[in-house]
Image (cartoon, one colour):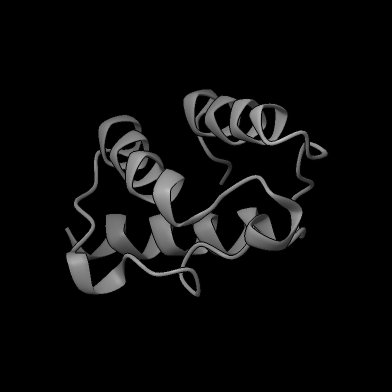
Length: 82
């Protein structure tokens, strides 16, 4: 499974805005600058809209969204639960 293009574009645009390298699949998105606590909220909205999932508030934390690989696993698990 791969993330929808809208999610990848969000991460790449946010990295560009933060003058950071665009992330690879296993890069730590927070250490690399592709995500921060402010952008995370907007990123969650992108995932919900483009992946057809609901993300509960309790899951909105950096550990859940650390890498693209982790996000893909999380999205898949949410799809299976719904």
